[in-house]
Amino acid sequence: MSKKLFIKTWGCQMNVYDSARMADVLAPLGYRPVDEPEGADMVILNTCHIREKAADKVFSELGRLRILKDEKAVANTGGDGKMILAVAGCVAQAEGEEIVARAPYVDMVFGPQTYHTLPEMVAKASRAAGSVLNTDFPAESKFDFLPEEATSQGVAAFLAVQEGCDKFCTFCVVPYTRGAEFSRPADQILAEARRLVAGGTREISLLGQNVNAWHGDGPNGSSWGLGRLIRALAEIDGLARIRYTTSHPRDMDDELIRAHAEVPQLMPYLHLPVQSGSDRILAAMNRKHSGDDYRRLVDRLRAVNPDLALSSDFIVGFPGESDADFAATLKLVTDVGYAQAYSFKYSPRPGTPAALESKQVPEDVKEARLQALQQLIGAQQVAFNHSFVGRTMPVLFDRKGRRPGQLLGRSPWMQSVHADANERLLNQIVEVRIEDARPNSLAGRIVTGEFASTAGRAVDHAEARA
Ligand code: SAH
Ligand code: SF4
Ligand code: F3S
Image (cartoon, rainbow, N blue to C red; front, side, top):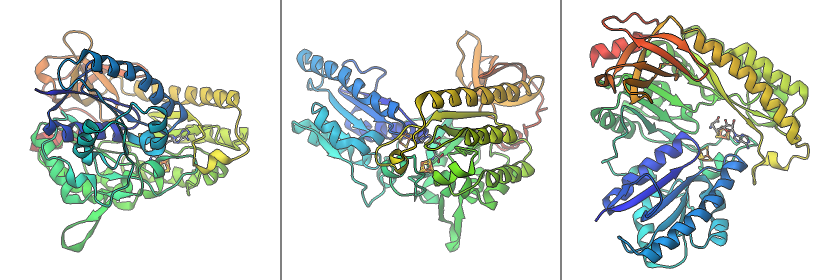
């Protein structure tokens, strides 16, 4: 009898990818994903530690799940009557011991680098009372142990190519929760990409905490960077779209920049976090680049591909941030012009240097700065979306819309686009003329029999070959 597996995922796309891989590892043990925790034989919380609020959610969620676990033990319907309750991800890595102490009813606590050992952990947790804790950074790579039979990821898929971070920005937990930078070998990545495409994937987003720090061995002892890897991926027939995220400005090398000019499948949208526009704050953050370094980089990228749109992450209220520092951030946003951006109030994280700074910014100042920044970014996003009204663009329809007869898809620039369309266009790339723009989406009409798009060359090329 199959067992029910419920996974709840917080945090970044890497966690979404990891959750899918956990389901893959558990499939041979008979676990099948379900949509709700009630009655599940295993519940995994795949957690995020990036900001305080994200981490807090875990304990409140555990309180609720404990009740379901007790109910299942009493009802004893199906399975062996036990709900295995697990905490995975970055909170597990950072606070594993505390979870075991505060919530002893949790059966397994394991970090992001150990989920290939799930079968052993499950065997232990089924036998023993008490929690199995595994927050090692094993010498072997989990990627070498993942089953090749993967759950289908659909037409737009994630592919992890790099993990971990050696940058140690002074606000950030990721170097501690994910460990040192690691690049998967190129042949492994290409094999996974080919499997995905054979299974119907048309768009692949390459993932990494510092994805453009990826490096690997090419043929004949050559050394590859991400730009070269993207070129190799672009040779896979049927792969129409390639993206990568998240990049660090310091790791944008010439070859990767050139790929934005020369690889038609590489989408004209880049998430390139800058965090702040103040050189003083950037230095205190240990970003190791200035605001002008970033501006120059953006200029170089736009010089090779004028269609390129940018997004970023920003932190407001970093310790010591003055009004002038914050004004420099607004200035940078105005200078660069973003298609969209994420902004966060600085959240002191245990174990990071910035949390120990005495000059913490008061909450009301953080809040006011966040509002001001989000207003500016919001206005840029609206202007960006409006600039497409009347233009035609290729849209990858990957799901049904809310209304019957409507499909929802993604533009080359990551916008959601909806249009009235026949269902047979689902999972296809179709030319759409944009008729209306909202802050968070575009509405358009299917254009048949023509490829008149300004940015359509990427897809036309791939379509022609596919
Ligand atoms: N590796 C990526 C993303 C890291 S986490 C990068 O280098 O950009 C995603 C975003 O969360 C960061 O870009 C940053 O803006 C935000 N973030 C990280 N730590 C934070 C903290 N302590 N408080 C507030 N925001 C934080
Ligand atoms: Fe965190 Fe900085 Fe590494 Fe990004 S580069 S994961 S923000 S330490
Ligand atoms: Fe969160 Fe870990 Fe990702 S802290 S943002 S889940 S790397």
